[in-house]
Image 1 (cartoon, rainbow, N blue to C red):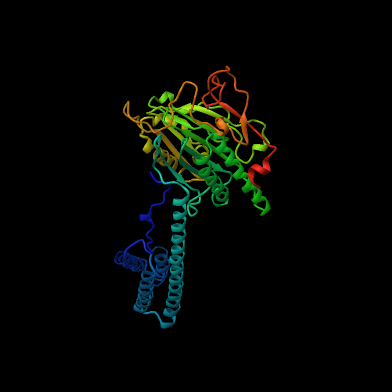
Image 2: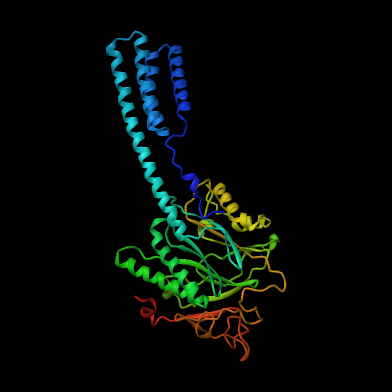
Length: 444
């Protein structure tokens, strides 16, 4: 599975759809048909004059050389045929001149088309190089998970649009981002760049998952601040930020994004991951008093976690019916994870009639097969009944300058799953947002 429909082998530009001998044979046969029809209807002059349209047709599908040869053939043949039916020279010159003029215009149009195609090819090559630097090629394997997937921008020439993803191998496990920037195609790329850069740096630096989300929030706010000064619209970003370690569960912070789906061997168990209500999107944290939450979910070996953007669920068929992703996943429970994204993409194309209206990003994650019992692990601590092993700054899991610990129930002893003493009874830690030090934290 590749990141996008882009393949280097397919970028070889061809100026003509057909080889020259084949095309010239078709031109000859077309001329013969016109001559025969003219004889049958006893109006050779008018019918044969239709040969003037052969050069424009070849200019659309052929090379300059093929267009020139067709133009010479059409002009010469028309002149000879019209003389052969004993027309006066005065009657022969006007249609011959018109054919020659149309041939010249066709040659010029063909040259422009080929030059334009070459320019587009160069732009696509540059865009493909940019894409390889920005979006990680798939599939991708880490010590904890294997990620397959695809990315399809709605504006193919941009190659990168508003839907983005990233995978980072950090000291705290594998961290995964999938996000959808408000807007489509090229206008959303600037915000997407900001989010990608912030995630790559914060995923390695921040021990807590909320610290990573804090960095993404700050990046979006900085970009929006710059956009407002330059007259561009401010944008928000929906995102899922996840962490996986060697255990069978994972952590996720939902910033207003679509719920991920589990694809299980038992079709009845396939469906959305049971998480709480999505949090506020990135860039809009000041509009909601609700704090973001770290939640835990199970991803045992044999199951596939599907992350996707709204380009999938908002896709419609010609009758306006939305794409039934949940029903499809129940039907595809036996499909290998490496083929799931490609299967969804192909089914989407059939469902919409190849009418893609939004960027599409799909990630299919599944666990790396468990090591042989007794083998050496990857160095991270084992999972306990209460501890998750992802400590945050100052010893608090996921705590950051923006998010702080908030009222975890539980006894006075023990450790909760995020490493916070005295909170073992709660399965998801709540972060409270601090709005008082916005300028210092964002660096604006």
